[in-house]
Image (cartoon, rainbow, N blue to C red; front, side, top):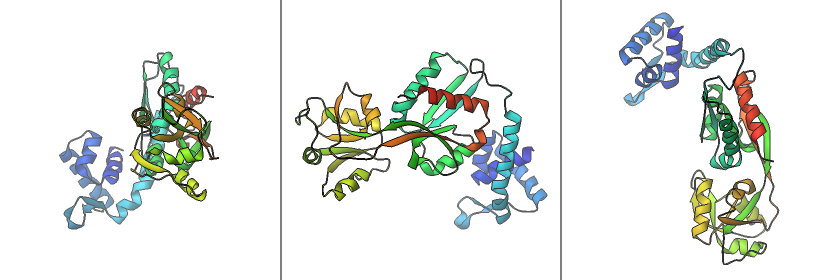
Length: 294
């Protein structure tokens, strides 16, 4: 069994040093296990990559990788499945993947709900991950829940709707535009701040405006939603962001309905089906659904 666990990590990392670090054993000890695995399976499993950079899997190793991991995962689920889950006595770490919009919209309420109960054995981590890593990390149990838009959820996850939201436009208090309803001309006249994970100055709203024959000038692009309100507070820029997020910053900004019709959206929670019957996982999902704002 120990050799199979080591093989699983070796095939994932394709690097003896990193695999040994994950397994918390010495590199010579893991190299000895690799030699034994090569003998048993009659295959080198890992061979030097072209140009001498790292290692690559042999065809036999590549064939074994996914079935072996799935088998070990099912065995782990069977062994670790609790007969009951009591949050007042349980010791468990939960990890939720979400951006800072979802953290402000839903995450704060979830943290408040759980911490008010003083569940001292439970810890909660929130982090951002790229969409193309979601399915793998949830399948491996490194991420418990994912919160995002419907478009963010990859096929293969269970999902549940959390909240409906829509976009509004925000400006600083005392903005020279005043506080009357925003017109399309004003919307396009001022500079804009955009949230983008890759530094883009373009979004779906720009495509929508182009269809109307209009254009907005985006001069600032930031990776995090929470960076926008302080920027608005110090400039005359506008920003188009989710209403529920902007509501958290009403003490800093004024917000208005968009001067054009733009589709609302939903935030969902997603999880891997292998955790459907995990009692602790069920409890966390229940807490999230109960904590969502209305």
